[in-house]
Image (cartoon, rainbow, N blue to C red; front, side, top):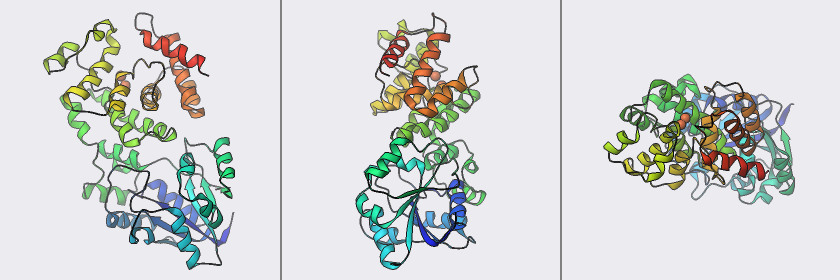
Length: 378
Ligand SMILES: [Fe+2]
Ligand SMILES: [Fe+2]
C-alpha cells in the first residue's frame, strides 16, 4: 500500500529502541513519504526509570541512520510539560498543513486507547495506522473502541515483531541483550551499563541455591509473563519482579528457610511438599528481601495452586509459569492457544489441566476451588 503523499508519526519512549522498532521503521519508510520518529520525555503510562534522552537519541540514530525519509523529531523532548500525542499532532499539523498524517501504533497500544488525552483532537488530525504485533490480536473490542472514539484507522499490511522495553530488561539480566536489540544497540547498552534493573536477580538465584534449569525457567516465565501482563494492563515492571522471583523458594525446605530467619504460620504444614516452595518464596520476599508490594508477594504465593478470584497479577504469574516456552507436556499447546484467546480462557484451561492431570495427593484444595470458581464465572 503506497502512501508516499502522506506522512507518518511514530512516537514512544524508545527506551531502548529495539529490533522490533528498527524493522517497523524500515517498513514505514518504504510506505510513507516521510516518517517522523518522536521520542517522548516520560510516557504518562510508564513508571520505571530508563535511559536519559541523549542516550535514547544515540540509539535511535543507530537504527535509523541511512534509511531514507526517516527523521527523528525532538519536539516532545524539547518542550516543557507532559507529552501528549494530541499536542504533537497539532505541532505537525501547523508545520505541514497540507499533508495527510497517520499515527502509527503497535496493536498492543490499543488496549489503553481510551486513556489517551483529547482523542477527539487526535481523531481529527490523524488516521491511526495499526501494526499487528504477535500476541496482541486486534479484537472486536479494539475496533469498537476506535469507532466510538471517532478514529479513522487502517491496519498495516505488515506485522511487527516481538520485543518490548520490559523484555529488554529481562534479557539484559540474562546477559543476552542481543535478544531484542540490534547488535550495535546491544553493544551500546552493555558498554553503558543500561537497563540493568533486574540484574540483581542473579545474585538472589545464587543465594537461594537455584539450579541452572530453574533459572532458565524463571527467565522464560518472565519473558512470557510480561506479554500477558501488558494484555491485562498489569504494570510490567512489577510483574517482571514477581515472575523472575516466583520460584525463589524452590530449593529450600521450610526448615532451611527458618534457619535463614523466615517465620511461617501453621498453614504450610498442611501443604503437599511440591507446592510449599510458593509459600516459602512469598515469605522470603516479604521477610528477607523486604518486599512490601502485596500484589507481588501474593502472586508468588499462589503461583502453583491458583485460587478463586485471582488478581490480574496472580493470574499472569500462575499462567506464565504454566505455559512458558520451555514447558513440555502433552496438553501445553491447548493451554497456549486458550491463552492467546484470553487470559481467563488460558487460566480456565490451566486449572482444568491441573484438576484432571495432577495426582490427587498433590492437588491442593485452592486449585479445586479455583477450578470451580472460574468454571462458574464463564
Ligand atoms: Fe513454582
Ligand atoms: Fe515456576
